[in-house]
Length: 297
Image 1: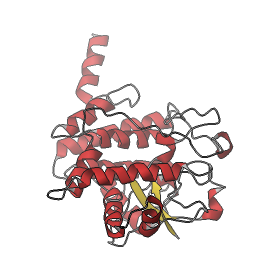
Image 2 (image 1 turned 180 degrees about the vertical axis):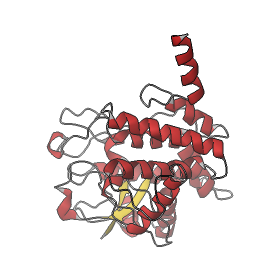
Image 3 (image 1 turned 120 degrees about the vertical axis):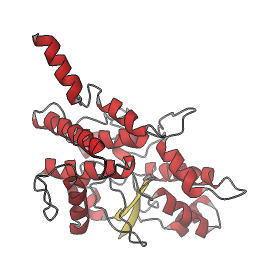
Image 4 (image 1 turned 90 degrees about the horizontal axis):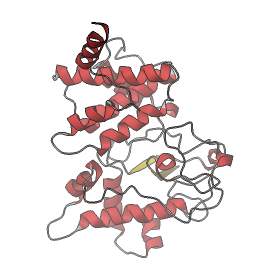
């Protein structure tokens, strides 16, 4: 059974038993520590006068001459957030009706009281587009929702157009074709990863998924050796922090989120500067050598 789900629901919108936002970069809380009843309020990141990369993606894909269809798409997303929040904790984040059944474009149109079902379907296509990624289309198993620990341990599944949709949690991914595609992307940065092999450990799999997302979001070109080296160094820094226990695997998700927030012609530079933050621990090779030379001379 297919259903729509809000991307990154847990880290962006979920709350605990005290009705406070969960820590997005710590270990995910077990289900019994989340607010049991539907959410009364939904928090949104205030980007103020700044257009994010997601905003620009919506503007690019939703533009229609003589209309403001871009705002209609974003408005639909806000309504879907409200629908996803109006569920008990086991089902929160999914776009479902009051009986926890998946909502199609027609069902969403009925709830919102609109008649343009075709326009709703087009807007859903934009929201689930990999370059926007606010919504995902994935397999929905109601009987397993109560056993889930957090938000959306789901697989990447192809939509009707054959494109691979974004997913929320890569560790439960089981689609062989998707894993192979991500491994091919990762092989650009790590010669130790075989094109025909799927990463065996959880850390390697999460690193490969992060690598694939960065290639897509930041449009890294394989022929640009400098960018390839820098991206590999960033992934190595994240991996080292996980290996020594300084942070959890969620650090890879945080890096992807930061990449999505970068925009404009200098987004690659913005992303690199963000990775230099203490939270991510990336130190450029040149700067690191200069620091050591000053310390030991």
